Image (cartoon, rainbow, N blue to C red; front, side, top):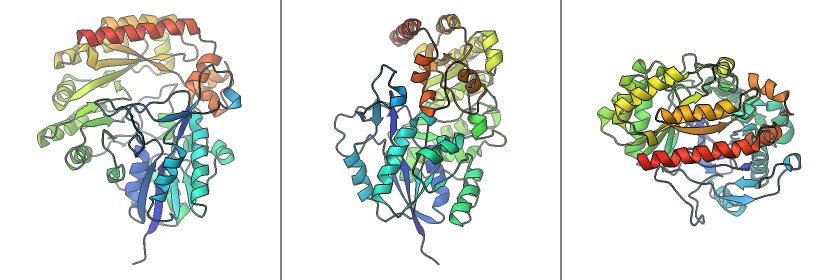
Length: 442
């Protein structure tokens, strides 16, 4: 038997005006790691870690989330007109190099993941540090940015190979071309053992989405077709995280968690409940209102869901028809009745509303906020980012230049799209007030 190869997996720095650890872990990288284990000894370094030695005073909420460490850096020339301070989020350079010194081998490959397209400057910074420390290693770039705009990555990031795809079968096919190895494309759990800290943990029970909204690139990246994991595997991951790693907070990363609930999430939660493990569950990506049933809501309450986030987006019918029509106010009211009957209170139910989508009627945002609040949920403003390969990206391009990835930042687009910033302040004040009222009433 030949010796196994060696590989380092790296979660890169973020450079942005704002970033926050709201259940943010590189789950795709951990999933890939479960397949890499067939051929490689692995080590994981997280540039966004909030637990490395020396991070004194780092705040953690009771759900494990909190602010990333950061340093102020010079704003890139292309976006110096934006009146906000630019930051590099992640551990300091010396701590990062110390993490690299702890790698027990000189890696043959470095697998570097990527996130938002407009975070590429932080990705370039990370790649440069890796290249200087491990000059002989082959850097393999993957992730969302690599899949959305590989041509840009080829010009701006220092790597040896790129995986311009998402979906594990597609990624493994590319990986076989790079390494000459064969990987078994069978369902596997993420390599949670590499994570190293477990204030919370992410779980993905399905990939892709059943909708095709104009602002979203999920279906470009990964088709939903036949993508739900076996419920026993998903439940097993949750049970293992709780029993083996002591996880108390679990975030579902699914975009279509409630789809076909009777055959999927209901069975997942039933299995978890039967196991007797205790955890709190969160839905940061938002739930599809249309698929919520009384049975699912009851199981969610019994299992320990403590932060329900719904995706409504707007009550404006014209807007809904243009964007994807995931749910209307009638369906939202029905979902609120279901959640209330299951025992969820107002402070536990939040609702994402889109802001600054091309062509959106701005006054409808305030109207929708009031409607959502009156029905017993807390409105949460979600700011539009132009994402390549979406229909709304083309609409945004007609308003202002969004071809350069830095211009796809939601803050940059807010300032350059012509949105009324005074009105935005008014909306933010409303949002804060409604959130405080919900907390006081419980």
